[in-house]
Image (cartoon, rainbow, N blue to C red; front, side, top):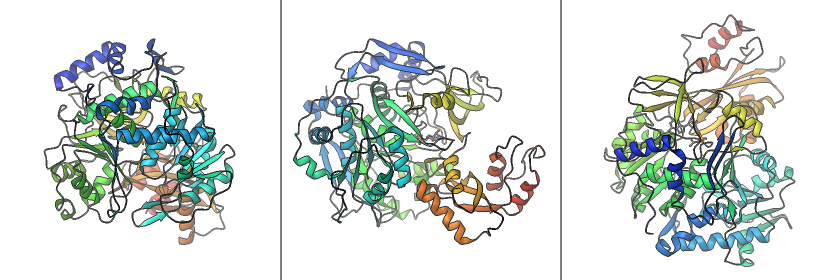
Length: 637
Ligand code: 6R9
């Protein structure tokens, strides 16, 4: 087998045919996809499902190891091809090129470090690491031995690390001493030490030295990555795993306080992410693919690591930020590495579009073939800027709609195949059966008519999350209880007369700030912890660059006066408990929050006020306290 792109659909007619088959005979369809992977033992049963329990199992009885699909099977054919190009934060530091063979050796070597430190199949390992190749190596090493990785984005606070470690009882934490982020250096190990005061399940901490700074180590618990490699073997057999064994846990915000540990399992996730990767991006053998997401998010899991490596492509990992040393950095890297496929978020596009065009035009972007967008709706202006100035109107834009829960892309054009339409994620990929649901909870039949409703999915797909770690009941309530026998996405969508979908945004209490999913409830909980605060309500409002930003309404105890110092303290509280990305942009002190008679805060009204859209507040007379609305409006920021 040469370069592994045998899953690729090559024309729009093929797409329609594949789509039809995937709906009429889903099992047959996914069997033929799954057949292209390396299984130690083929599965007995392709699909078993029931959305009421809910239970979904793909490829039961199959045995495999995902790292054999990402690494071993490429050794003979493309062992010397670059698997990962790492681009450091500082443009003057050398890039690293790691071939498939080198990556294979590094993964096996580090897998033995895990084993030497008592990690066994099924154990959970928390990764809190910067965007360096060692993050990829640690992930794959976990998968190699059947340990479950739980990656926590390295911008999160120590409280966030601790709660995630405790929720899934991780035995090990892997981190780096420090991370470079633009002109800053952040002390990751310090954050970990703070978190580790309250995480009794952690036995070992492995620390990668990214900088030469002295790093305080706790004897017996903390070990340096490099020292551990010295005493580890370099070969490691892949653990035999069942298709439905856990591959990883990834936490995403919930609308109640606690983050949800979404569980992805090996077989279906591998099949789904690889199939969607190849079809959406349509890469060719010597292409260079760059997804700018952090591996701490699902986009990085599926489309920097697993999908690209299982496909045998060259994937770029960037340590830095788009603004350092200047706002031309992305384009400088595209030019330097001859990037062909570039995948980023609307928030980055909007931020970069504000900069002088000179920062784009001084770089040669002629290698680019395909542009991608993910994370939130892309507005028309950003779409055109991206298309005109980066793609020079010759690169198809794939606007990919999906979620942490879906594991892989669900609705998206396939590059060069599906006709695109600005702001539309267009058509469902094969195997995805969306449905729009109206106000009454009924599915709106297609009938070649335009429609708008809540987006749900009617049939299982291989890469869907199987549960919330330790809380199957919550999984059922959040995703399978709104509409009978359907998965509810939490998003609203519009569908045009040709069946193209445009995602209109969240319909629940999640706000997407700069592409990050933030639950308003945990932020409110954090603010309410402040001793002067009685209660708070957090809503999103439109923001030029971030897409949405956070607007917070706060009530204070009677004897407390609002002040700038208090605003700063509240912002700090949020930053310390959740992370800097969750800091509210605006804080308005109010005498009361509008509530329903059952005591539910009317966020709908607060959202409108925050967006300065008070023309149609609806009927406020049924509120418990209608008078506060006027006061809030008069003092709105
Ligand atoms: C992959 C990822 C999921 C939520 C999702 C939706 C929004 C993602 C989008 C999009 C419009 C797109 N979203 N992609 N909205 N167009 N192309 O972002 O996962 O972090 O779990 O967020 O992001 O609201 O429900 P996650």
